[in-house]
Image (tube, one colour):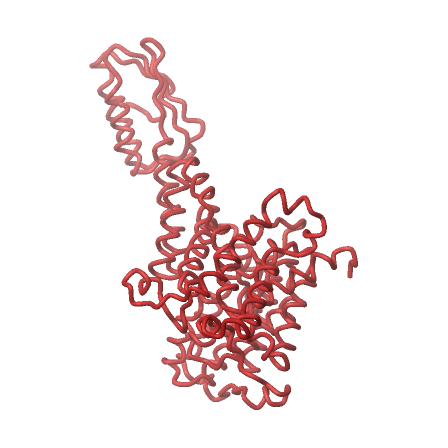
Length: 491
């Protein structure tokens, strides 16, 4: 352990813990599971997976992107215990994928898709947290605010606005110039100010304090009390083919989300050498295997918590381990203290994190790079928001492939004029798809010209391409066109 990094890792661990706690509980509730199942998932991800992971900054735990899969899987299998069996099998499959070094294929995912995933997560995070910042109680969607079907809370908006102001101030040169303040990250200050508002609000302004939603953490007297509430896997369920299908789906989606989060994290905080995706997949597999045994939820590396960890100044794995220990300790013995944290303060932290993931500068940079970059980027964002994480990523990759094919197709052939000489360059191998472009260029060549073909870069040409060239070559003498280095024989 490097003692010189403690002043960055300890506050970062506290901030990640404060952000992860409501997410763990909220994701569990959204999945139709007891809140402590999400809390336990955060503990496993924060301690076990972190110990095995090659990444210093990736935070693992329950992911919002898997909520729909969890809900649908439990409905299909008929019970949470059968789902736990599928989760164990998914963990085993992830370990096998890691041993087989399947993680290397993540390098095939284009950068535009990864950036689009980051931006989409940021936008979804903002959409999800705006109702909370306005004082939502329970599961309220953003559309409810637009339709007017929502009761605003002045106290929640004040706390959230104060938190956002603090987070902005912590990025200004004025605050950065004060060394004493650099010891405390802005998100932690925003949360502490929110706690002060609830503590003093209860005493001074009870009416306003009642309208300020807070964390609702279940109370656990001991570890044995928690263990008594945990559900065990249904070991007979492995004979059900649906269990194996759910296991395969979980393994693929969780692995993909983890590895894409790792790739996105590289852009936020590079590591040298870069973490091995195969070791990361193996670590996640062990985590999901353990989660299935203990009655928890699926685990993935989560970019939102990881980005909070990085932005809070983390230097080593210690920050993530601290967050895992705090989840365990506070969930068991200090729930009454955590219940003083207003959700509006945490919403401010998440809104700011979402803004940094989907900053307007990112959109401008992608636009300046041309259609080949911004079209897949926007397609990924739209796909994730409308259809979900996995489908959106697939749409982004498919769009990038189509854009690359189109760009490659346009640049495959070039015709350059030098007086009465025309140079036709083949930049790559040609297929029947290049025939329209080739025919168009050949039609531009006038009579009584000299045509030179440079085809060193084309090692292969479809018979259809050769037929077009041969037809042109046979008609060339009639038009007074002389051919040089013609790639096909002319009868």
